[in-house]
Amino acid sequence: MRNMSRSLFNDGSGKLGVSTAAAAGGTAAAPTIVISSTTWKEANFEEKDYIMIDSATNAYSVSNIWEITAVDPSTRTVTLARISGSVDLTADTGAKTVYMQYSKDNDPQGLKGVLDATSGSLYSVTVGRRWQAGSQIAAGGAGITPDVLNQAMMEIQRKSGKVPNLIITSFTQFRKLLNILEDQKQYLLDPRANDLVGKISFKGIEFMSAAGPIGIFPERFCEDDRVYLLNDNFISIYHRPDFGFFDDDGTVFLRDAGSDSYSFRYGGYLQSYIVPSFHGVISGLAT
Image 1 (cartoon, rainbow, N blue to C red):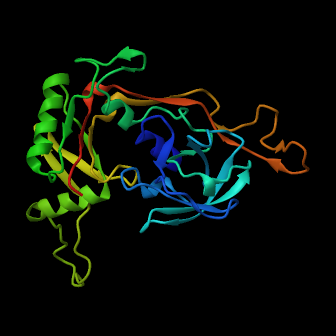
Image 2 (image 1 turned 135 degrees about the vertical axis):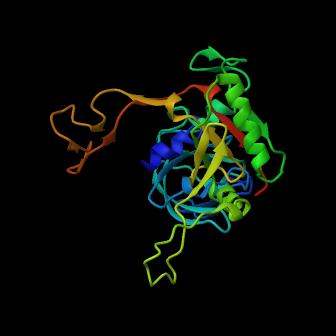
């Protein structure tokens, strides 16, 4: 489910981030890379993940696999351990693009890929007036406000005839919205309770649209400067049958080549289908 969330909020490229151009530190077998601030997303990097790297010096290859052994969010530093291959990242001074294992240009389509599109094609349909996000607002560093949310809502409704029923944003923007809507919070108290100390809270926040209240939820895979306005009636995930443990050989256990060990795999083949005109995105918000 984590990998599905990662791909759903990405652009289909499988990209996790791009390292800075400085040479990686550490040793050849255990280098460290620093992810640029513009491409950093903490949720994309977890210990035990297997990744692959593409650069001008060392082209992407499925034979070069790395395991993430440590992540330092404060410095955006990721420490790796070589699983296979012979690439020496400490001698690679160019920018390095990091991908989830086997995922380069192989992920299901994501919200960023669909809702950011202004040209080209989506699902083999040319991007245009009727096949494009219902609202694309570049905030240009401005703060999140009810006005910009209303603008996006009304644009989507005007173009598609439908109102979004879900707002998803980053924890950064969610915190800002909590502060903006502070005077609108409602606390429900049990008048019979005599031990209320430390128990007064709220379940969440909603945005009042032209069609009524819409829930707002934080998502760790959403970029810090973004808000997505979605209608989940027009988002589908289609997958081939037998999604789960691979058992085509009559068993989920598969012998590893040249070894007496066994492995098993879980997964399937799927694609996310997001009809662009019923959704919107606000990007470039102040963080």
